[in-house]
Amino acid sequence: MLKKIAVLGGGHGAHAMAADLTLKGFEVNICEAPEFKDSFGTTLERQEICLVDIWGEERIAKLAKATTNFEQAIKDAAYIMMAIPAIGHKHFFTSIMPYLEDGQTIVMWPGNFSALLFATMLRERGIKKNITLAEGHTLPWGCRLEAPARIRIFVEATKLLVSAFPAKDTDKVINHLKDIYPVVAGENVLATSLNNLNPIVHPVGAVLNAAWIDTLHKDFYFYKYGTTLSVARAIKTVYEEVAKVASAVGTKMLEYPEESFWSKSTIMSVCFRAAFDKEGTVANISGPSSMKSRYVTEDVPYGLVPAAQLAHKLGIATPIIDAVIELASVINQTDYRRQGRSLQELGIAALSNNKLKTVLQRGF
Image (cartoon, rainbow, N blue to C red):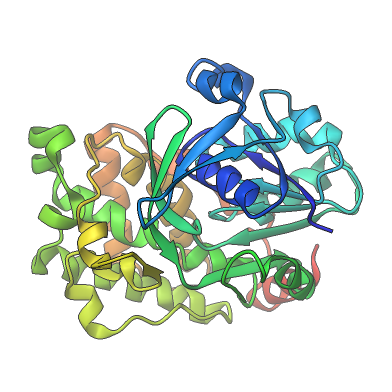
């Protein structure tokens, strides 16, 4: 069933996923958008990726195909893995829609509310292919591109929430992925999106460390320097506000030991493992180097904004989340509420809470 897999994207996560799946014995195509061909050039030329695992072992993954042709990439692929920034979701999905085939499953890593977005896009365009949409709450690793076509994995996930839209299809996806990744079923795709820790940890920490980020640039280490007790208290409060939203829509947050909120890596390292000292491994990952990094420009509009909109729709107060959105908008001179992912484009703005729960389980 899963012999052939297409991985979409050309960044850290996509390179790690394509190399890892190749080394696990799958036939893997990796596809980047044509406009990013230059930065993807080494992978296109070599048709292989060097993967350095958590033990420091280097292995060469010889890909079935590295391309910028979406049609070629997804043809006959049972699974399409999208490991791309949320800002690229609409563009990539629009690009592959004409070539989708019945029976394919698309999984977004991480979801960032994209399963609902894609389902709505398919409805609006009248496309009735037999496609399964799913999302994970995070990437299966913490990784960085060390050089073109060379990816290093620092930590590996020990638990990955995965859910399908509609949720009645989740067991099928879990059964297909359970031998590849440590997946467990989430209640629905709001569980996977709300459990993404990046929007919970990154924006509030970046805003509260803005002066240091502006000053140190590439020498700033978010976890090592930025997660003091003061900042950790704010991160914990954002987590608690998101948890209230999750509870209201009938989902659960992954639970973290109290002491993990006060560690240097915060709760980010709890569900991961490293060869040695995972907290230190996470703490030594550098960045962000700018307030225009994905810690803000992705995690605020595509993580915090839809969570806040959902909270307001349900009458839940989220004062700290709201404050972070406003401060980030002022700092970057960008209206993240207007720019962000809206409940309208997710197709759920007009739904009552009871109707929303039904749609999440059974579909539109």
